Image: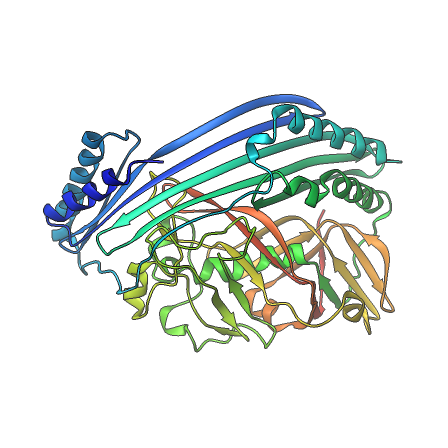
Length: 479
């Protein structure tokens, strides 16, 4: 970890040069990655990315600069560059940039693994990949395992944030992820493909908790049945039960992204899309019914998106994006919060030291209900259960969306029946959140990397929710 005195002196230098706000953030990201294909190692890699990012406010203009050289001369040069950039742009500002009056924290925290990631050797990672490849291939009875790509990644992220507003936050969060992408082939029926991943903060103990090999074998066998005997979905309108994996993706894309305050204000239009939400709609526009409560919470222990203070030093907390169908609270950093006349809710995140903190998601989920899966099935004369997805897309304003089911089944008289191949759920954001007629009580999370920004930034997240029942809708079928 960097000497804190280097960051303190950088902030002092910036304020002496006329900055009304200054922030110095050290960030270190160390990753180890094993990639395999069909049981053979393709690559072993280690990545170390560390440096200091400087942000300053000068004359109502925000300047940013970064350096990967951790000596006083280089860090001070980054300060001078950030100040110079901000001062040069200040005369062009139509509206001066201001930060809100959020309380920043002075804290130190870390995630302590039960089994250190350093104890997870290359041999153990490669052994897990070979075991999974052999087990999945051996579990298939009709289809052939055409391709099996497997990866294990460990990532330790350390930060120290110091600002002129009193922030001093030191943190260390280890993360581990495992993923597999496999293709099954049956000559008379074609192919079916699955990308399955596991991810969390913590240590190597996660591997036993996840039961990776057993889960992949079960998925492979289920998809073989879909490939071998899947039928087209019904052509008439039917009730649909949407699995928690798809629900998580839906809320990430159609609640999380459109409720990022910079998107709402139009900043992200040229970077990562727009939003159907306008500032005046917050607290007034109804996007769904009473089941439509979407929560964003970075403080969930063990989550991929875990943090207790954001990259501006603001304490993290749960945010209700949609609350019982109403647009409730956007994701803010200190600048967007000022524009909305509120306080930051601790959503500023940066991918690494060379990127500026912007409003980002962490762990996004639909609030669970009180129904068992059997209760969701009850009363469904004819329907479809879409458990997982194979592809999806959504428009720039996050309103029109489409999801193609992967592992899916017919529901007949309240019971799971034959597999269904390639059902398509296509509807608007408003339709989805208005058609929910029941939500399960079991909350499940899935890992992902959320992309946004220009230059692009990818940050670890979870998304999830319960299984959900939708009122009658006409499904399509993918070719």
